Length: 412
Ligand SMILES: *Cc1c(COP(=O)(O)O)cnc(C)c1O
Image (tube, rainbow, N blue to C red; front, side, top):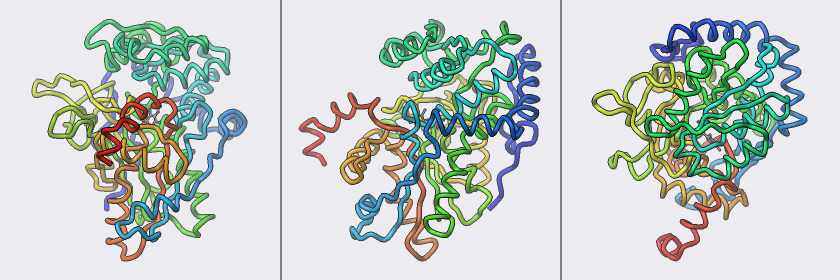
């Protein structure tokens, strides 16, 4: 197996870079310097660690899921060991706060007085608005006008937190249009403004910056699993939207070749229908949001809409480090359909008493297949760590509509 490239000025193998207008280069340079001179210092790390402990509730637990482990075994015997890294127990209910707090703390140290962000479903917008409320910084969130309509509760939440939500009317009026608009704002207001990107994507240095803020997931999980089992796991699994919770988990294990890494994308209605968000599975190499990676685009290179039942995976790109982990063979990427994710959510809730986010339900849908495959390759039962990226309360309406209807019950 080829080890992944360490950051070489923002490149992960042939992926990453900075595909932005020249006017943004000084801002990206300033942020790159700040990444080295501020966020890498012991003082910054200590301040962020204290915030993560006292405000977010870290370290999050590592929960062994033994009833689920029995359910996923075809013979219904407990042979594998599953451990869940509980990002659902973070303040605001998901891992996104780790990154938002890190970036807003960094921006405040850089002397920035205004934060902007883009958001699709609103989850990153809520995390950023939360961090801004905590720091007393003004926050403006760009959101496609379609998404503003579809995601009314998160819009309300952001406004309650003091943020201004700016509906974007251009293009398809969704996430990619909001990203373009946020970049445009940043170009104009770069002296005072920090652009808080929500996943391990975007132009250099964002993928690295976000990966470092999320690597607290993998660092904690590694220490916790060593303490609990005395050794590293056989596999680590996470869902892939832009790829930030996955890269955060993977960073704890990527240097150990014995730990197999699996990312699970959203196959929506099915890859063959074209209605999916499985960028690494079915996309092609292209440029989106300022970096080179895999994207969903048509033959003319136009970015296509992504489709997934889970709003957080509904993104037509993916962070460049995942593109490299895929092409180098270090990680494998699978996909799960909407229906598979829903069934997995029902199973996890009933067997473990944990209602996972729809995003997280995707890796749960594949954990049985992955455990079987890993066990076969190592010749003994598998120990697996899964990143439980968020809680499912936000998806309750979908669960109620799809899981408690007579149709779903009968077809169980
Ligand atoms: C946003 C979100 C994701 C997807 O984002 P990544 O950057 O791929 O981690 C996954 N799970 C939850 C709960 C989310 O809110």
